[in-house]
Amino acid sequence: MSDNQTGPESYLELSAVSRYMKVEAIRGNKIWGKIYDPVPENMNELKRCFAQNGATVFFEKQGDGHLLTYGYYPQGKPVKLWVNLLLLVATILTTLFVGALHAGKDPFSDFRNIISGIPFSIGIIMILGSHELAHYLVARHYGVDVTPPYFLPVPHPMTGTMGAFIKIRSPVPSKTALVRVGVAGPLTGFLVAIPVTIIGLALSKVRLIPSDIPLLRLGSPLIFELISKVLHGAPPPGFDILLHPLAFAGWLGMFVTALNLLPVGQLDGGHIAYAVLGKRYRIFSVVVIVGLLGLGIFWMGWPFWAFIATILGLRHPPPLDNITPLDKVDFLLVLLALIILIVTFTPVPFPAAGF
Image 1 (cartoon, rainbow, N blue to C red):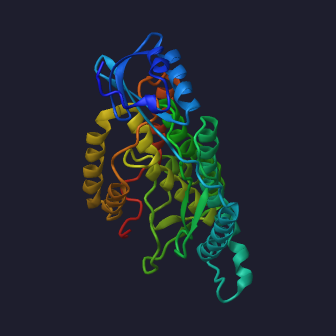
Image 2: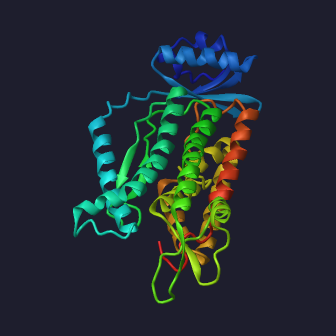
Image 3: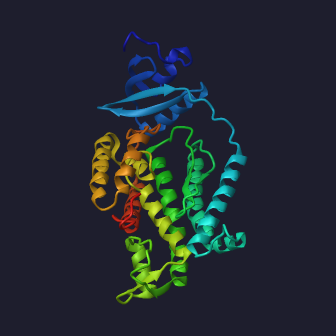
């Protein structure tokens, strides 16, 4: 054992730790050794010992042994729910205005036209809200301190919003929790986007498109294209599907789902990839960034998102338990997330458009 035992004695008797692991060295807030078998049960006891003294402990595999790193995490400040509600109301208003514009109405000349924006607003709020609410509920189930969803209203004439997010304010307990919290949002948002898309495309019309009228053209992900083919078949030459605002909300929900599932940074896909790859995640994330830069030959927005992901950080904070492997259910959820990414992703979401 190292003579530098300046670690847990300040708040925790070393004998309490030694009861559950063979301690080999202590430096600062790090304890090296080997947790006794059965490892899962003794890890739970160690968590309890540290928690009783107000500390949080991280577990990592180190060769044939284990590394414990402990620290203190201050309690998050109470959430001001009025802020969440204010942002939600503002997002409803901005999406109502944008939805009216998509419906061909001008709410600025006649405010009553804002009613035409209801289908788009309901569709996009339902998709984004269900996505973040699923994250919130699953995170709370695993004991993670998270905030309720914050919506982001923006006066963008195409979307009216930059999405929504929750803030994670405490470490995630395990790789399993990382996967399940990460998958919950995209899966739920995708399941809501499907009926929104079906109803929206059913309300859409196949029209003759004059060549001299500029229209926003969209790339179709596989699932959107499949639903479109089932409902409308292949439009004849010179014709195209004029999307109902609700159908555009469904398309936008699928686009946001694909973005969130990109396996990089602090995105949902990044959480899932880290849980699967561990220390190899850093190299993998660099490969993904290079891939996004390469996709810039199809759409200028991909390098932009690569930049945003890099700015937010390619390092991923570890879960408290970085030892216990994922189980079969976790890997099935990872596979499901991959399938959703494949069917919602399109290399060219906005042909002939910038960001």
